[in-house]
Image (cartoon, rainbow, N blue to C red; front, side, top):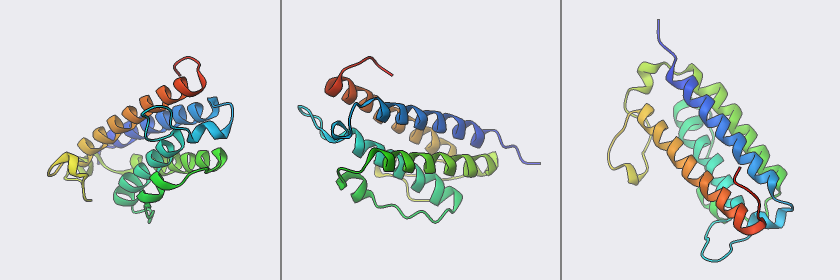
Length: 159
């Protein structure tokens, strides 16, 4: 019998963090602020939210889960004025992808080399479990940027 511990654990963490991203989006008083870039900020929250959902849909859904998702990374960084409801819809779809994909992957498979092309920053190979750790860290890094962006554009406390 295969053990299924790692996949559900990563699904729980990433789904929770995606929920935090939704709370950040909802904390903006209007949609225009989702696309502002104050000072030296390069990516508005709308861009980061699209990127985070697309990143997980690709690396987890398409590569590990075979969902057929086709990533459009340039659109993640280039689209603007996407309505908040549409962004949240993409996040909700990503949450469902994670819930339906990761728990079914046996730990033994997650301990094997990641089957897709890794980002250049990882230099070489990594197990799927190690890459999921990287994706979780990457998500947290951007979520911190999102929180900072919200606090400098509209104020408020950390979420």
